[in-house]
Each structure stands twice: as structure tokens, then as C-alpha cells.
Amino acid sequence: MAALLNGFTDSQDKEYTEFKEELKKVFEESEETERKKLSMFHRDLDEPLSNAGIWFSARIFYLMLGIFLPCFAFTIFMLAWFIAR
View 1 (cartoon, rainbow, N blue to C red):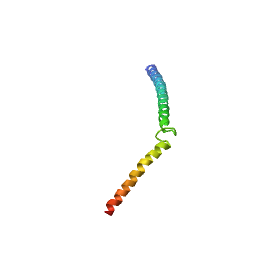
View 2 (cartoon, rainbow, N blue to C red):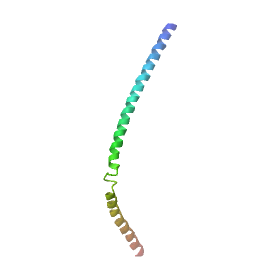
View 3 (cartoon, rainbow, N blue to C red):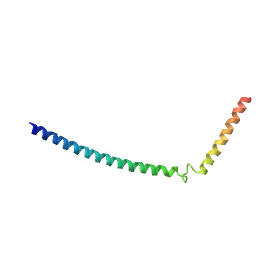
View 4 (cartoon, rainbow, N blue to C red):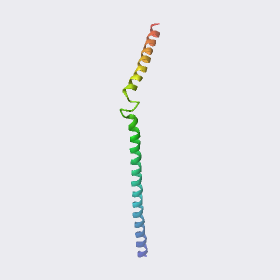
């Protein structure tokens, strides 16, 4: 009986060790895949947000400022006109 139990525990230990090694391999592959995806995401995000990108250039900033300031001034003017009336 003891030999049977020892054989069973040995086979369980062997299966457990194989499972741990397989799980470690899967997690390492998953980590590498996620690292590649994150690197690609960073590269894709870095291009539009760089200084040469269109949305953060000085030209676009001045264009947005040129749109915002007249609208803001008109709003203030209209509020002052309604209050004074």
C-alpha cells in the first residue's frame, strides 16, 4: 500500500511540476505578446502627439485661439449688453 501511495504522490508531484512549467511558459509568452502590443500602441500614440503632429502644432493652437477668443469676447459683450438693458 505504501508503495502505491508513494507512486501516486510521485506522479502527482511530476504532473504538478509539469503544470507549473507549462503555466510559466504560457505566462512568459503572454507577457511578451502584451509587451509587443504595448510597444506598438506607444509608437502609434507617439506619432500624433509628437511636436510635428498636426493637433499640437503652433499653427493649430493659434487657429483654435483665433476661434475661441472672438467667441468669448462676443459672449462677454452680449452678457454686458443684456445686463445693461
